[in-house]
Image 1 (cartoon, rainbow, N blue to C red):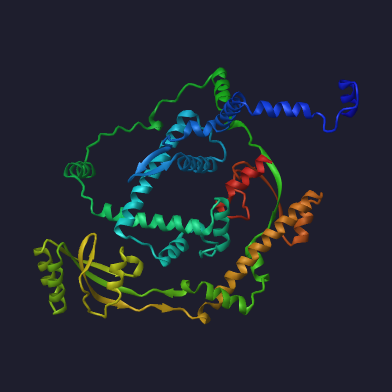
Image 2: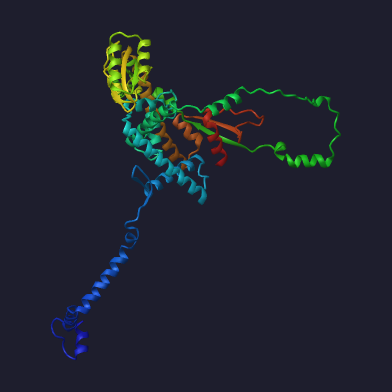
Length: 468
């Protein structure tokens, strides 16, 4: 820089070069012309940098509104993405939607979101709740979450959450919402009346009878056909080549690792059994159940009058007549537990009664209720001594499943290192067999080949054999 300055000035540059240039720029920056120029530059860069935000600022991005609350594009897009993933899994990756199909699925996703919002609003308005016990019992009753012993499997449940990208709290929340929705929709369906015209048409179709004349043409009575020509035989053979072709057969080696066979090898401590019993105590508790009767009337005065009459010893016939005279109705709710009543207020009133007791009138969105406890079945708890062996087997099964998973990883590593499947099976104590089979699971004589797996798993195994 110094040598360059000397060439420019013909002498040694003054200290602070290039001060004259900076001085001139500072002088220019102080003019009104420069200030206006800088302002225009700043505005142009600012507008260019936030162009996308300016373009969408103030624009409504909601695809629908329910009770004034928007359903945003992002939520609808996420719902569409989940539906596409579900269909893709169901079709094993063969689903290729075109623009029309995607548009139809997008509309279905929006419709489903609108329906969910409407039902959620009504559920909140009516105060419908689903207790934890009902959610737990429903999950335990789902066959897909049950192991080979028919009981709830925590391992299967966790795998389901993992494969569907769900956390346990989120899944429980979704299930609770769905159960509340079922309570509401079932109540609506139960109160729906079939139109007379539709009922008459349906009954007429069910009771319809017809007279039919049949003519039987017996092949045995037909004349003997002419012998086919060589050309006809050749054409028939060409058109039905698969009937005269032997199927493809493959000889495969199978190594069977069954978690059930590992169960007797698993050690389970008494502490593990006690901890499992404490963690799952609710499974061994039978909730209190009650036989409840109810009258429902529209007015508070009629409800108090009915409560007084019922508590005074009036029989069912008299209560029914009094309720109907007040534009209400009597109903027997049957034997129910706390989860069997749709509203918390009714649950509290019904389960606070002594046997034969009558509740004070309870107001709900449906009207005024009066309840009577006609029957009480106390809750019970199975002690640890009666379920110890059951818990031991359950814990052992979970440990066996974990062990099988760990061994499967070791098997994959051994195969990758070049070991044969027969050698690996012998080291791991697995059952090994060699079979010759076609794609339908049959042998050369057309009989089903016995496979050491569940019947439901045969198609997947055969597919794997003939895709390898």
